Image (cartoon, rainbow, N blue to C red; front, side, top):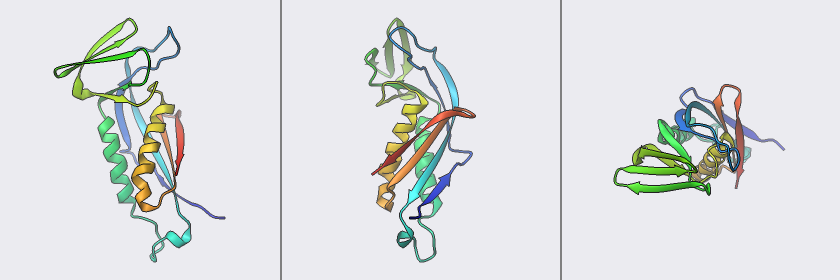
Length: 162
């Protein structure tokens, strides 16, 4: 059995965001940032699904969706909405964040509360993979792998399937 995978690893598939990792009940990193790089591999249906021209879908269809999502994360503070020690209070245009002994106040529109327990590359790749598989299923895509690197050579990937 053959499979074909589209590899989309564009230079502009990136986002710069602040975050901190939570290691255990007493230890967490300081707030800091990364210039994340994202790679997306899309496994396409078998040959019978290719167009008569011999391709699956114009790459631009996928690239626009990927870039638009990453742009939403660019220059944002990424916080884990599902961590038990993370408390959020909206106060007008501000978001007050309490994490254990820490207290932050951010402009509300500069924070993304992600549906994760930690803003690790493992969980960031999961969120993106699950988003892209849902977006791409209209084209018959059944499998998407997303890699997120926080620095060159250091990252994680998640494969989502329907």
